[in-house]
Amino acid sequence: MFTDEITIRVQGGHGGAGCLSFRREKYVPKGGPDGGDGGDGGSVILRVRKGTSSLYHLKGISEFGAEKGQQGMPSNSSGRMGKDHVIDVPVGTMVYDADTDMLLADLAEYGSSLIAAKGGRRGRGNKAFASAINQRPRQVELGLPGEQRNLRLVLKLIADVGLVGLPNAGKSTLISVLSHAKPKIASYPFTTLTPCLGIVDAGQFDSFTIADIPGLIEGASSGKGLGHRFLRHVERTRVLVHLLDCSLEAQVAPAEAFRIVRAELGSYSEKLARLPYLIAASKVESDEALRVCDELQTALGGKVLPISAVTHRGLDELVRRILALLAQDEDR
Image: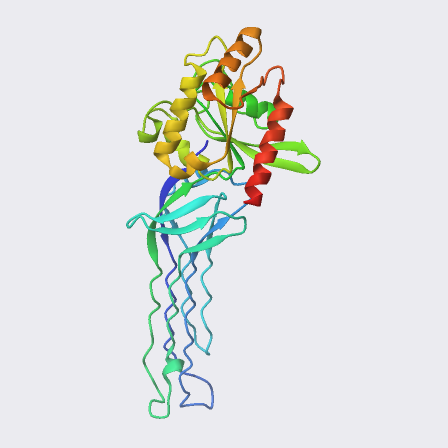
């Protein structure tokens, strides 16, 4: 199950206390202090790991704690350090302090990590306090408590291309044909309830990732429908593909559908409104649908590419145009 936002509590391990001890050996009746230091507490670390695509594995676990450090021991033996607790998260996870809403880290690259709650410092044993004027110290330190925080983890998928459109525009079918992704496909709106990522193999060593974003409706940027929850996933994309249903069964005229989606993207983020985009007329599988596509091109005053995921019409050209826009983005 896909989960893209969760709140957790993290607790670093307490540092181990120092040891109060004096040498007790045969023929050494007045042995000096030999209490060792405690061990540092373990830290809670967030780490990006390949193969993790959601925050679902953290659901139902309210608190994550690292191991505390071991207490110091006699004979100047230090306590063992507490083990770190490593939490695997998907790439694109943004970490916020849940109490202040301050962004702590944007884990947008594989291998990146964050010490979310540092372990407490170890306490010193009485050996550390020995001096010329205090040869039998009875002073030790307790270990310091580890950090504790409430964190809000927000996942923003990272993809090269984002498919956007009204519900039932054909996004799921298209991504299933272009890539090996297996989204739910049905003939009713809102079949896609979670974002879906796929990798498109464009040949000649070219490839790109594409994200199918759940259908938007008018008012999505202010909380209506399902798509508003996933608009943040489009923010990471470099190119948008507007998919407009040009079949005779379309509930909304394609030109009006384009206006609605552009308005919602702009209301949500100016950055989204400035992203380069392509317009693809989907479900063009008849002469009537092609006529609707021509009317759409006239209405928008720009190039509209007729495609069909069912017959594979125009898909090669769509991939070529996407690659061209991605190349232009890299040159900027």
